[in-house]
Image (cartoon, rainbow, N blue to C red; front, top):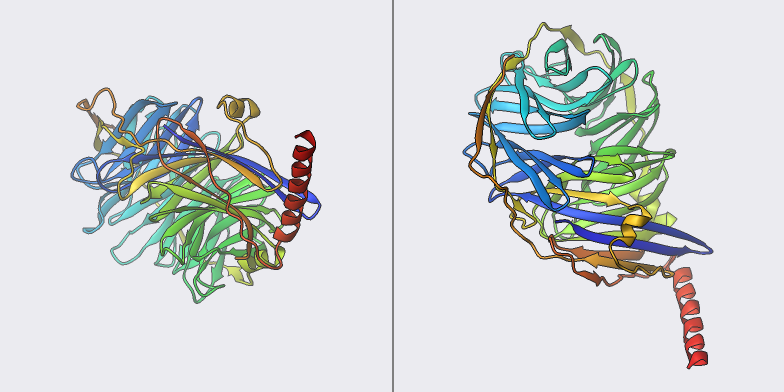
Length: 520
């Protein structure tokens, strides 16, 4: 099922070696038309793949697929009489919660929705909520008792306001707050023990607001520019980290990361860019470091690529890597569990190169830096609205998806992270660590896999750079592993670390030749 690849890097940095070990597993799923993944969620020994698809039915549908190893547990779609778009999904306890938009946006007749499924893919409810015109839910999170959903609502055809809704596990609205200045959208939400933090855009400026758990506004801040900004993520880990994209720093647009204290004070702001139109989609705290996952434009191919970068909490770049395919590849979400990152998105490629460049400090400083921004008080009009969620009739159907045989526009899922030593050994492969790097790559053959039932239909009516050393590997989706070695790409440039590395290689090589002659 998965394309497996173990990458072991051992780069000589003058006299201090640095070792990185990662395993990367790819998977694509979809049909003959457009498909996109929005969540890749681990569950015991299984994974859930969640997203939207144009491949099954006359309208866009949501999909939930569960796999254990190489076996499908189920492949299900959620279909409404009108277009259904899944934007985010979370696993809370033994249930999946999906949010998004259902209805016709062209006729200003769409609503936000929340759906609850059990881990067998059975739908418990599908509920909608919203004002008179278009509404959409963009993100969802939870604490130990409630769910929190954010998005936008249009109380009139001309005004667009952000919203925050607190819901019970049964999908009933506890409170609903709308806010903004007429062109506002809430994009991301996170919670602490006593507060709800929301990030979004107001007339293309980034805002962050803090609400109490009762829905009362405590503070609101905004970053005002003459450029267009967008929000990717907000997370709370003692401090707030807000990510997204900005057109302000470099000519082609960069990703940004804001560090904000719980009282709304800006601690620092930085930009990060590898190409053009960079955007940091997800921020993952990892002990003393931050892992950033996002998208970047490729100047050579004119496609979009995905990147993973690791920074210190103080904002120093440690390393980064890019996934490069023949077409555009975009990620929509990422999460970490047990040191493994689970990424969902969209791909137009059938194979990828993962490139980890080793750049000098001089080059690193051209990739990121401090942003001087205007951070000020924000005064949106905040209104509590009496609103109830409503039942919505949908169909849940088994389908046959195509696994690991990508068409133009498939849902894309992959894991990135070092596996425990015993799991690496179970692959029965030998990986050698050298002074530069050694790569072992699995390249399988695409296969079409189907569910046991394709006709079962259930109708559910619910009640209310300066690159000096780089690793390049290529993989293709498959179900039958064939282990093979991938060549190492090394580029030497003045001012980098390739000089010391080459010297050490030459030194070690000389010793090996000398020993072989002595033994011969």
